Length: 306
Ligand SMILES: [Zn+2]
Ligand SMILES: [Zn+2]
Picture 1: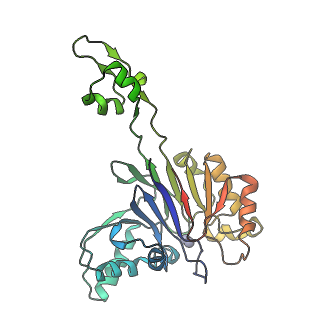
Picture 2 (picture 1 turned 180 degrees about the vertical axis):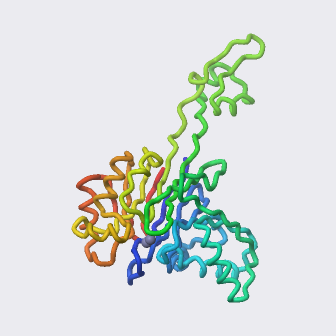
Picture 3 (picture 1 turned 90 degrees about the vertical axis):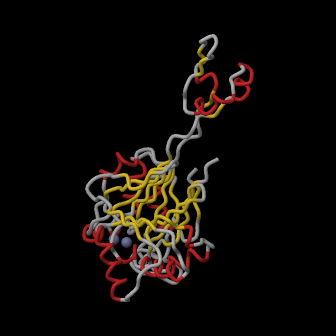
């Protein structure tokens, strides 16, 4: 059974408060960690959850507003102080590399480990990372400065062998891997072919998680995130403050819900809440009027995606 979950490390917009940190999330796919955005205080949150920094190999930064990356420089420094030697992949806007380099240069620091920088493409969806289990693609968003979200998508899983049928028909063990890949089986002596669907069951469904960071209402993303298992979408404001989304390029809770509904998401997590709202249920209730399966992406909550 696949493990696929997201831990919310920060849910505030703009500035930290006593109870909420700016944006950061930890995606866990089969105990491989992916850090998504790294606002102030992310190190402490990771420590609270006993996440070893050495297990982080991929950090994705959506854009260069401070509430999404100001925790990164501190985290990189701590990794250095802890003696890290494993290389670290960072995905983000190209100027992020300049910021990191200037910081290291003026502090006369040379990291003990190498940083591998991957520039994100803000023009079109692009695969940033691919391994045996998943792909991670950028989602071009519409914000005041260049900004991308990230789509984590499991690859199609192997078909499940029908052991009872395999044993009954005397299919040799060497053929099992090919069956999992969808191949039919052919008895070498007789040439008799047994169809794959007789010998296997459908694979477990593949799941996906879309992280839609700061953006104004943008229907262009729907095609890319269609049928996503879980959608995180910022919901900075209430509809009553909709004038603010025009200048800030953010979304209301209702707009986030409309994106979830139109993309046929199974679950919507909202976050990046403006500090002006003391009662976040106002945002939740507004979203639920459009999309019932909405939850607040509050600090320290874990959401299962598989
Ligand atoms: Zn922000
Ligand atoms: Zn922003």
